[in-house]
Length: 97
Image (cartoon, rainbow, N blue to C red; front, side, top):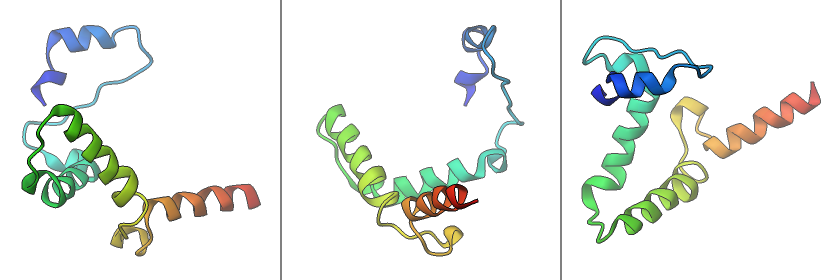
């Protein structure tokens, strides 16, 4: 978003060991994984939920990500495993190598 291109934000990055990378306006392919997550998040939770408070929205977001998306929701891109299963497999295979 535009907030990451503003001078104040870029000034905060100076002196940190980071390299800012942005593509042209409207190029969603630059960050396709995040774009896909937020599309799913909005369609599965946000678009049909009324949050009475900011705290309720934060709690629902945490429960969605940690309780559903990462632990129970199977992902076709992960061979129909959950992210938690894939992470466990990754670390187990790293220890065996």
